[in-house]
Image 1 (cartoon, helix red, strand yellow):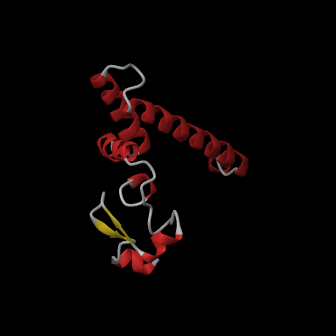
Image 2: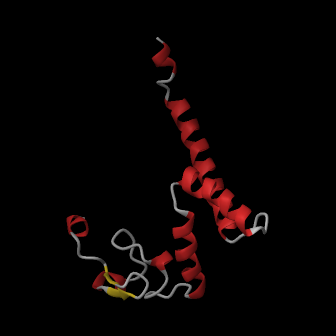
Length: 119
C-alpha cells in the first residue's frame, strides 16, 4: 500500500515543476559562475561552477566556458557561433538545411553520420 501513495499524478506534476525550477535556477547560477560574476574570485567561481554545472546540470563547466566564450566573440555568426549550431535538431534558418561549414566544429553541418541519417 505504501507504493500507492507515490502513484499520484498530482505528486508527479508538482515534482516535475520543482525539478524544472531547480534546473533553471542551476543554469542561471552556472552561467553567472562561468562568467566569474558571482564572487568575482576566479578559483572560487570555478569551484562552485564545477559543482553546479558538472554535478547539478551534467554540463562540463570547461566545455561551457569554451563554447560560450566563442559565442560572445562571434555572436549569431552562422559559421562560428556554437550556441546556434544545433543541427540536426534545430535549424536556425533554411541555409542550415542545405549544409553549412562550421568553423567552430571544423565540420559540415548537418553532420552526415549514422545517427543523423536515422533522424
